[in-house]
Image 1: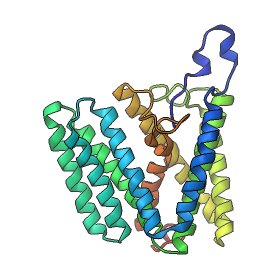
Image 2: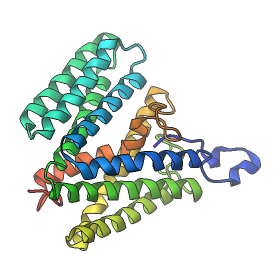
Image 3: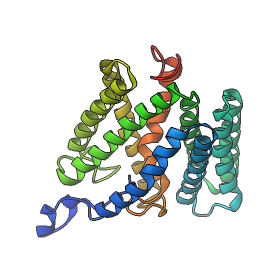
Length: 284
């Protein structure tokens, strides 16, 4: 989520005017991007894999751009190659190959960044982006159950992210983690968790699962989404940038738009392999 000036930080009468001056741009961007994303999710198959690979490339490029201002072209090539290759291998269920490819790309990014210091930032960024995107590709593999599982994940994340943003922007309140962002509030956290759970229960009911199980799984999924948002805010603070990019009006970059989804996807991947019953719509 792109950072905006906190109304609580404004002087005088402006302090009382809560809200986001970029709200209209955010809505317009969502009206354009949401149908495309939903269409790719419904389509599935190679189209969805290519869609995720393109987003992974954009996220990897943005990470290098904001974390390494002096990065040579090869740094961008390593990061985007690791992300795209990982997604395409994972989409063919070549999980071992995807893991090896991503690990190799992360280590190559580490080696390339070493002479410029802070090499672990390159390793973490490449691995984080590539793994999160690859998990999304794997979750959508099955034609029917994969669709239901990815819709469950997206519904929880979008509800948690959207209502956390709305509550934080319009209600304000105590700051959740000022070191990460002046806009993240406890009211936003509560609203995000509550609506994430509601969305999870509804998505489970729609898919024919037990809504109670959907609600229970939605709670940690929504927490993971909030954690992903905070993590990206901390990263941007560390790198001294306001947004990860400028490609999406009102949001910033691709990383700003999907920061919550990335951590939630990693949680979903871990649950699919280790959780009781696996991820909804998939196998244990």
